[in-house]
Image (cartoon, rainbow, N blue to C red):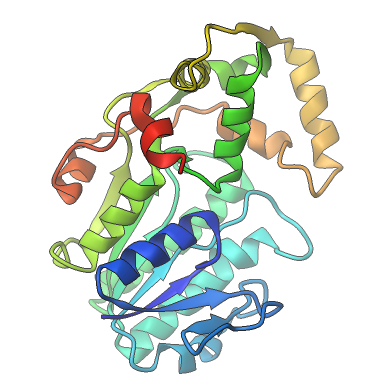
Length: 296
């Protein structure tokens, strides 16, 4: 297949690009307009500004499918979250419908239902438009909602690994207690390969989760054990200090820690692993083996 992959240079996007190419597909990878294309298969695109279907129609010529793997954690002037998560994906979906490119795979996120964060609300808006186009029989979409995605190159994964190396960890209580179901980035990529191969008939939403749920604090402890270290001291940050640190992060646009991050990390992020396992044709990699299999 000829596949347009947005976000091809990001953490998830790079893994998707490698997996889809290895599966024999021709992948046209979206890159930032500030990057110089290395070959004809790299397509400059700007999710901050390409908010009209007309921007996307030329890029869809000859394509068989689209995979959208673009995402940002928080709002910024350079990458407005409303444009990146909502306006531009909707324009892309509308262009797919106009161009007859029916197969769309949207990488979303678990835990966005009911959340009031900008991250969640903008992601939901894009999903709603995708479902509306599917209801009109214009698209055959699949939305993948992963829990915490773990792998080499991921900013959150690097943070977790750095915390796991410390002899003492101080974390906000809501983060320590939140339930997660970590998933290997390679399993997420394998699911996309399946959806553009043997599972092309699949439509709808799939929760991409590992086989077991655990608290975030226990996950970091497991990473530490996988690294060969003994148990660490784990301290719970006082509530007042947690809120203060998040507010301070709000004033620093470059900081990944802010009130929205606290709200997201402090919310359970778990799902039913059965559909994901069926899509993979096996159980997903358990969290106890993530360092050996995904941190490479």
